[in-house]
Image: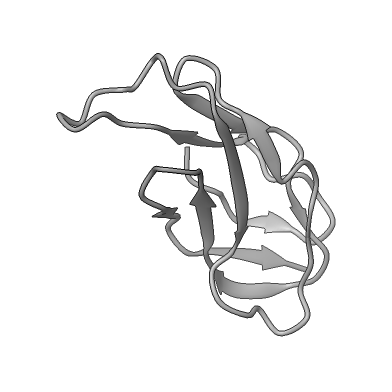
Length: 96
């Protein structure tokens, strides 16, 4: 689930979800590793808060409490997990 436009200091809803895929493009339901999200690039002083590292459940990592502290446009998140290819989100905006 991609991040949606959201007001500053409000939890991004619906929660951002990252799905691990196997080599055939199917959900890797056996993956239970830790996934971390952060900003891709430098968003000029904006801070991403919430639980930034979570364990995947049946291949899906859910970030239920992410928020950004100030308005910015075109923010992109990157998801990282050991031994997996990183993934980037679609751009989203944080509103006043």
